[in-house]
Amino acid sequence: MAQNASVLVAVAAGEAGGGRLRALRDDGSPVGPVEQVHDFAGAVAARELADAPRWLWASTTPIYAGLLRHGVRVARCHDLELTEALLLAHDGRWGQPKGLPAIWARLHDLPVPADPPPPDTNPPGQVQAALFDELPTTTAFDPLEAVIEGYANQLARVAEAEHVGRFRLLVAAESAGALIAAEMGHDGLPWRADAHDEVLAQLLGEPSAGGGPPRRLVELTDEISRAFGGARVHPESPAEVLRAFSREGIVLPSTRAWVLRGVDHPAVPLIIEFKELYRVWTAHGWAWRSQWVRDGRFHPEYVPGGVVSGRWATRGGGALQIPKVVRRAVVADEGWTFVVADAGQLEPRVLAAVAGDPRLAEAAGAGDLYAALAADAFSGDRARAKVAMLGAMYGQTGGAAVPALAALRARFPIAWEYVERAARTGEGGGLVRSWLGRTCPPAGDERMSGEQARARGRFTRNFVIQATAAELALTLLADLRRRVAGAGAQLVFFQHDEVVVHTPAERAEEIVDAVRAAGEQAGRLLFGESPVRFPLDVSVVRCYADAV
Image (cartoon, rainbow, N blue to C red):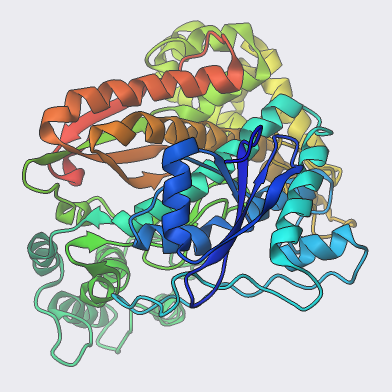
């Protein structure tokens, strides 16, 4: 790599499998000429081995997917598109187009085109003919120069952020998350078809030969219809269920489980069972497996930052909502095991850290925050302490929560004021930020009604905590990826505040230590030497469903 260069900008071509590289200094200024390469994957692999630079590209997903298909992995990158989304929101321009053509247009005062639609999902097992998906291009600009100019512009804007050091950490974690998401989708989560079939048979019975509902759902449909006097009811239709109850003189606002449980009617337990099993059949049944599982691995498509709080989303596959009973199909390979880590009570601990409330921080330094909180402020009543804490974060300020919230407010006024201030800002139509600087979306309507303003306040009250919790989890994940890289282990699953590592069984204790160290490091990176602790519940299991 060129002297004094630490960043390599990479632009991949299309079907030819080539591309262009150019070295940059830390400040984004180019060093040396553009290098045309005919074997893009090979060139990236060679540079990674020699220099381990920070790779700069327009978007991680299309380029890194091609590299992974050729066995090439990189340690670090800067994702221009994800960073642009963070910066636009920070600048009060949340939701503006963030793709490379839009970045170029803003740099040169041109009309800003809309972001291209997301690519269609490839059928299972199909690999695109091209080595790399082509970047969106127009005749108006050179993609490589656009990436270089966009990067320099982003460096300048990051330097103007409200909290520069924190925002730089956010940018780095977001880009690392894009690498991890691509790797996990490529590697896949171990999935045993025979165990899955056993689960489905126990829950649903035999599948229909024609692709219709399986036996147990058919039986439940008949039983539900009989419970309503014999009139045919399709329980998958909320409208039909509501009409059926109405004919019985029972008017319900919805068919949600908590609503149904308050009704004394023989159809209720049958409908609840049907809803649960119907969800398994449609979301993780036989058809789902034929689409998403191949070669003994579930290959989801993660979308880093796909939720406004910074949490991940998926393009189908239901990866973030795998029911515990279905997790019985997630079995480690022979001679391997899973290390499953869950950050328990994460959001209350985050509140203690961001608010800087010393009394709440002291409680959060304990293993069980709710128990410590109960001993300090709720006469040992852990249930009341939990209700109060969750009510403070989620805006539940009425009913049975009122006395508990009053006790919380009196004992921990600094933490209470932190979320109250976020709520007031939201109710007034303002913007709030996470600890590292992720900015919430604006209010949809400047002229909010009273209820709309209160709902907005509940959203912003929770945003400052939930988005920060997402940042802590992502920082942990990025550090853990680095720690397990040399152990032959793989990060195979991530869900909000839970991570699963697939590791050779003889390395399990080493990975457990790595997980705990990554958790401690993530806390230090975000909050310095805070007294708040973020303990992880860690399990070593052969089957994911057995994790604590």
